Image (cartoon, rainbow, N blue to C red; front, side, top):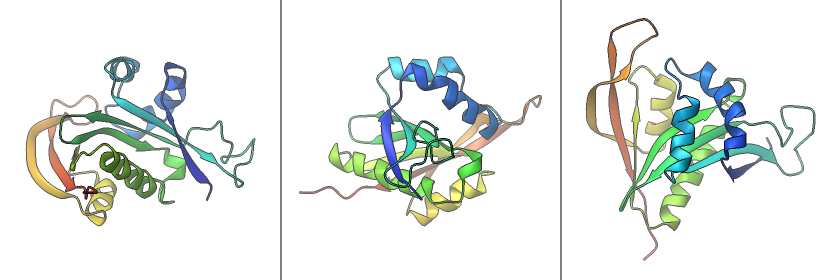
Amino acid sequence: MAELCFSPMALTDLDAVLAIESVSHHHPWTHGNFSDSLTAGHWAYCVRPQGEAAIEGSYLDPQILWAYCVLFPAVDELHLLNITVSPKLRRLGIGIKMMHAIEGVAAQQNMPRIILEVRPSNRSALALYEYLGYEQIGLRKSYYPAETGSQLREDALVLAKSIKLDA
């Protein structure tokens, strides 16, 4: 596995981001959602391979987008708005590495807590967050649209984790 390179997301990254987003979610974010986040100053990062293992012309090509995340910094917490790994690269530990990096950002910025919402039906994400020590602190009723064409909505579990800050 190559090392991960986090670079600030730019408008020029959105085609690659949307290619992953569109195959990863029932109701993917739109170009407008991402560009609005960038305009609003949210912290958005693209994740690509780097280091000696990076190989041009393969999935290890440093130009190939592996994953991305969007974070909203609030006064005393970091809100994880979107984290997505390319379906072809899931179950390789990228999500765990990303979450550790996000926790490191929170600590560096003296934000003692990370919060996020997740669908109860997203069992793999729930397992990851539970493994990393996130705990449910709330429930947002009918938060997510359900599958396309359905009028139903799905609740969101609100999870949080306290981040240890250096004194």
